[in-house]
Length: 229
Image 1: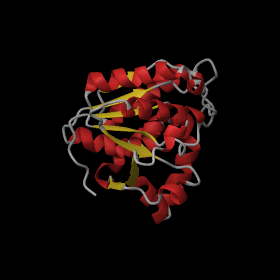
Image 2: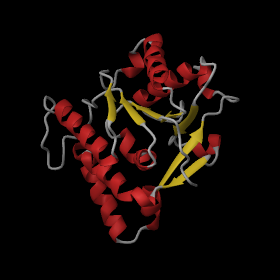
Image 3: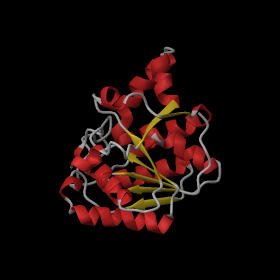
Image 4: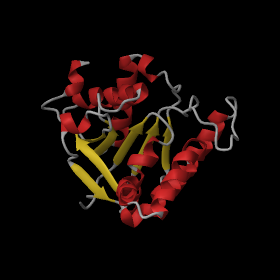
């Protein structure tokens, strides 16, 4: 599926590296097509479990390291509008709901995006992912003129409940940008990248397909799973 031209794309995720795995190819393609892209990263991922392999970070130094890695990822993607929103890692679920909705509303009203990308509520596993998704959906639900909302979902029951993704983009032309984005977050990705590159060297088609296909669901307002929260 060809990635269509948009007026402006807003990507909202809670952690550095959330953008790298699922949407960095899509972001790069939009940027290469001349579409403005904004990435609002809510935290610095300072509570990340990994400290590098071999370890090169400490609990004290990790926030600054992850900030530098996020900037390096943005550079790999070609992103020039990176917003670091200043929330604390692993606490987003405890933030005031209206504060979070207000933050999302302010971003959308400022940027007037035709497309917003975030996680799918109830299908994003991590509490920070879920809280971010809820805030985005709640903000857009209140809007009379809603932007399109494309969601990343990867919970175990995703296929059972949502079915196959509505959108699958082949990002092979920007594959190297996606790899560079993932490598930028090396404090968190070293083990995974080593295993992935071994599989790719062995010709593993499943791994190559994961790397070069990015999958999204249109948010289903008619079902509105999030409305039960």
